[in-house]
Figure (cartoon, rainbow, N blue to C red):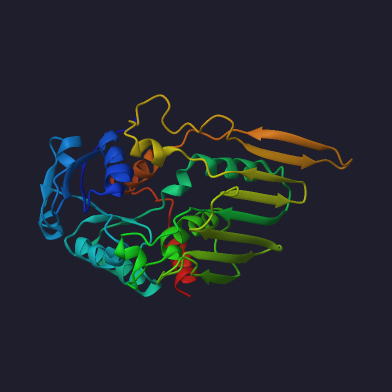
Length: 341
């Protein structure tokens, strides 16, 4: 990304599993303002195959003791986010923390106070604000064509009918279960558009044989002017429904969850490849409106090209030029209040 570089920010990753390899390293490497300096790899040393100049530390403490590192990406298991964020802030590093930020609002507020006391910034990795499908939703809302909203549905479904191997998601540890896994994505998208709800009602379910944690949730969120929003996620949906359904007094918008970035990055596609972030053909959203005469009009809404690079640009601008980061503390506290309730 072209940017007026006035400082190079040395960054370190606390893990190089799927999230480090897919969601962080490619973007830190592509952005001219960052230097991907180091990673923590306790056993297999794989990062050097992708980034020959990277330093691979054996422990979190070793990376945090590297005085040249300015920004630490907290991409460890959910139940370690609070511990590792606190350690990184005490080591006087800025931090970029994956969802969920913490397990509860008490931990979040403690970290906010610590960050302020040491003069460092906390950034929240809510990458789904930069999904291509979500840009369609924002485009339709900004157009005003739906009129006053009545009802909005956001879904994020999968089909995984067995208990997964990741203990931090499946065992009874802090911040485990589907609500902590996918809830932050859906709730952040809602909060980014509509703010904090007036009230909410939450339902959790356990449907897989032998599960210890929730694998289904549905939350109804009420907003001013009788706007009701529903966010739902299940691990037992064989035929996924549209990810976004919006109904207003003048029309409806329907869009499947079609952002392709994760799939492309897992397959090894580079950010510079021409097709990166471009949704598959025939996956556009459909906007149907009705005029005062009762005549319906259908309009295809094309998504912008998806890219998480603007998230990293926002982190860069916040650190170097003190620009406000789009995901605020208030956003995250509103999200956690719902999740922990």
